[in-house]
Length: 303
Image (cartoon, rainbow, N blue to C red):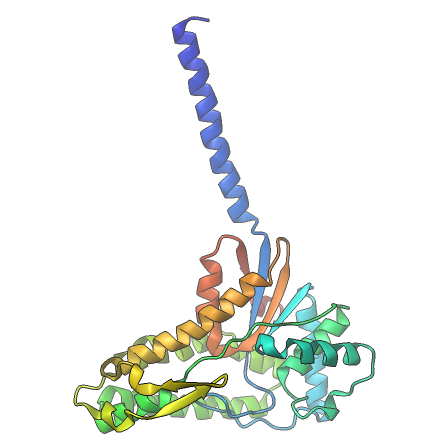
């Protein structure tokens, strides 16, 4: 084989290898190994944990139970083999025990103090319907600085914050009325619509993030502490001159911890349903879409 022929031979090999690797990447990106459906929810048991809390009626009534069963049937069509819920890993043993009892018809959800919660009403019911072995607790704790952002914005009379707060209150009241007068499926369709998700996320990326203490108000809170998982946090350790950024950073940190828990409980070929508060969805969706191992499944395709 002469030198010219050798050069042609190696060029062909490199050409095949190069385009072969491109095809492999295309194949991997078009056929992700892990499918994820993010179900953004409002809390069915109205625990009062959010910045704005909806007024929820009794979801143990016959009509609401019928609506829940309809929703369970629709979401079950996705056929997930894992369901992730908004409880911290420290609750895993309790959830395992409760679910096994529920699965064996030894536990009635009406006997649980929080039995109306979506963890039980949707998570447990889909898991039992699909004969899944367990549910996975993937929530994480986080520090909420909203009260301080509100206080500083009010004290400094930040007009943009006040105006948006008024609009937000009106929108919240409209959603609250809608929730009361529509079925659970319809409510979840609303919660997972692009507009509602964007409207919720806007508080962090366009409103709260702009609030900063420019006059030393933070000294009022110099010795304020907050307990998280038994540990005492001094709020003076936060940069109150940029309190809005601190709030958004803490919110992202919590969602990053949740994302880490999702990664740790995922395996190749999984189909995962994540049942979580609506406010978490935009960040988790962005993180999962940025990971080539995951493919987001549109929740509205099933609801």
